[in-house]
Length: 199
Image (cartoon, rainbow, N blue to C red; front, side):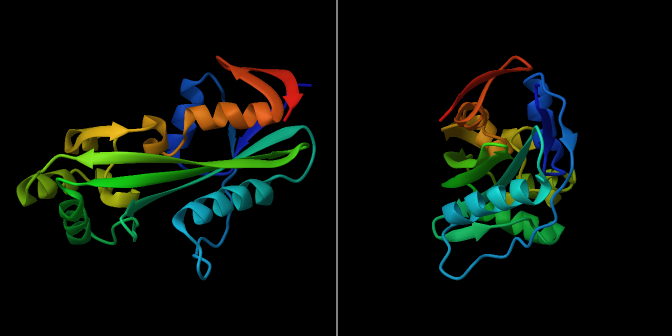
């Protein structure tokens, strides 16, 4: 039996990437505490939350539940979602002309147990000014996004280049997803799943 794919996230961006790959997941957002644990690194945090989301939604049976979490890291500072338009402008200006990292944790829970990984991508921002940041924030796009920008949308105009997986910055690293499917015993190609070997 081919398992149903369930996405334990309400993120429209993750849904979009899965649909781009030819899959049509059921969306069942997980309600989990996203607070940091004492001493927890950003990498540990996104992997733990991805696993927790997948485990929370998986209740047994022949389904594969995908959990994901993404954070923006500027040095040792975690750059979360802006609290207001003015916060978004300040956040963007703090990233302008510099590089930062985006960490995306991904996990798949199912009959195999849980497999997970973390993908790190470096994003280099253009050296834009306050007028540019203000104009972008006025579009409303950055207000629900970690780091205050969306690379897959209008925010692409703020990015000079990246080193790593573009889809990790979007929030759903495709290469990691396909690798995790293999570890879970499935081959995923062009919208179809076929049985493989459990890693």
